[in-house]
View 1 (cartoon, helix red, strand yellow):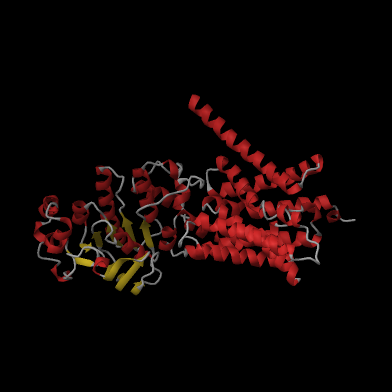
View 2 (view 1 turned 180 degrees about the vertical axis):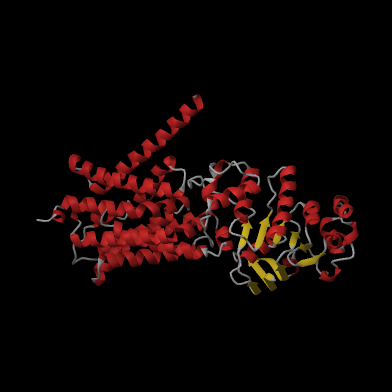
Length: 270
Length: 257
């Protein structure tokens, strides 16, 4: 019996893999105010799942391609006629609703909808684990490779242009990374909560960070603690795992924010 | 050496014709100032030069591998992005600590290295932007309202610094400014822009051109005394650049459509 035979071990490793991929990407989502954009991409994954089941292709491939399509479409449309958040709201919820409608047509197949909406980390198989870690590594490599160009483009697109960087290209890099993370995290936290794993660890890291690199590293740490702590909490209190992971991340965020306030108060007095 | 050249460049931004038929070239070692009223396309010209705006017609040619130092007119750093001054100087290329400190000192911001960008005053922020633009040995400096937020001694030091940079490195410098008299006094060539190039040439020449007066009135003449006083011997030069366009009276080009 190998180490990976234990479903709790597989779940822990899956959570860690997702946390490591979402941390650096999540920082960019926070810095660039892409939360809604992330939601649209993540919700589209449900539609991807339904389509994948219809055409009997792998769920990962279905979720990845529809998420990618959604990312490219919403990026192309935003800022034309409607305000970005309106447009993204339309796209995000339409994708989710269409996915649920499409899933209802799948009469022959039993689809565990709750599993895709909120994740089912305890059911992660060895193959899933391989996909999760491969995707996480790919995202980490992609972001690491483009880090400086991404950071410059995020700070100011014109500074990027002047330095010979094409910020549009960097934006597409982020979209591809986002689509991969969505497809990878679907099994772990589910389509509805993926964005929380992007945003909450990064937001928890912000008060403790004096530079972008430190923020990404602390976000990875916060995400890992949330994944493992959430898993433990779900096991102990018999609660749904994905939501428990997110709640743990939220507690970390609250602690970090509270700590910052207290520190600010003591400095003012001292 | 020509650093960058625009030929017959039209730019449309959101349906508005921001630039129209602009011919313009920057040579190494010259200081050029772009003046013009609000909405005359000054920033658009700067952004076209760096490649952030694609012309709808005409051609932009940059020298191969051209290194540009750019100070944008506006730079908003989101509070969620922790960015100390020293780290900002490393974007996108890491620079040595010595080079970074040197650039900060020369920009009058030597003690700001550890401060977060979002905690700087307007003037400090501008100095840091300038320090960053001076790093990586630029061949072309493009400074869009670079003295905004600087006090008068700060602005004066800034122009001395620019002149020094030109002498030390031989780079070309393009400045966009509202600060008409000071900026014009510091430059070799002035472009008066109003959607198209109204007139250009030596500062004294542009200041007396009817197109310039149509845009800015004669009120600026007194301020230009500063220039004339210092350089009254150079009045003959620069007329060769003079282009006449029929257009400064219809101030917004799209109004004619």
